[in-house]
Image (cartoon, rainbow, N blue to C red; front, side):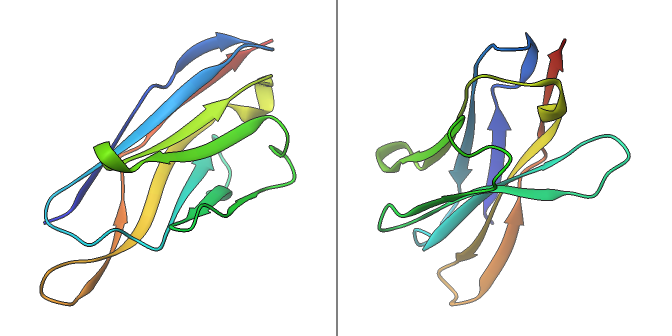
Length: 120
């Protein structure tokens, strides 16, 4: 069974920074793409950033230039650095990946989320 566990959220003032982590555990093959999503109160979950196994990154326009997605493959960890935070960045941040497990099945996996709150 594959599990994704996020951490690193918290309360920060506008302009501040946070680093989110998502640890992948279980038996799996490294996913070809991993992503971060977020969900603000009363809004739909939205895509934030993605990284491929080759290191290619993509960002939502709202976070481009402020957020950086990366991986620590030695630790099976997905990272998201959040800089120059704004109140509108407030929400629950989730990591996501479609992961192939040893049986050959591809399992769509979500973490439980970590809360980011940015005060003005």
